[in-house]
Amino acid sequence: MKEVETFTAAMVKLKMMVNLTELKNYLVINARDLDNELIRQSSLFFSISESYVEAVSIRDTKKEELSTVDAELDALARLTNDKPTENRIKGMIQLNPKHQEAFVAYNEAKLMADRLGAMKEAFHQRGSMLKELAQLAISNLYEVASSSQSPNAISYELSKQRLANKRKQLIE
Image (tube, rainbow, N blue to C red; front, side):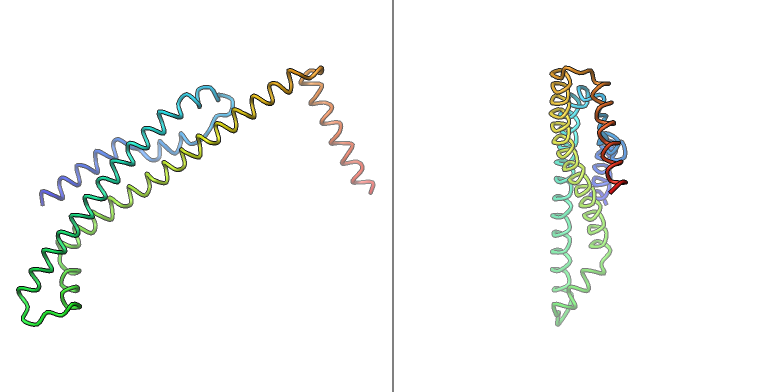
């Protein structure tokens, strides 16, 4: 019973540390505020990575506890039955409440670790996107700066060219 309380406390601590819904909101990139997005990315990624490591540790602990419970139940089943068969022992283990509690605890820990692993991957992708967006912003800045026309004139010329192309398509 103490193990279940410890697990519950660890999961509550982890959930307080990580609010997945809040973190999902940070995945959205504000392209108009790339400076702040780039600055914030490393701390967000570290926070996710730290939470992921914690969740994996809890998951591995729960897996080991499940194995221990199953081993204890297996030994008990072999001692109390005259002719224990593997199927009978397996069935006794699966139906035992201790196994079921340990399995539920392991499954919850695994789910949290998997979710944080996916979130960590998403933030890794976010970092790549920020890099690409920064490169795009830099190239657009230099393209406009090196042009002899103003940005409005360039936009006007592009719109004019698009309309001319559409007219050609309609005529053909």
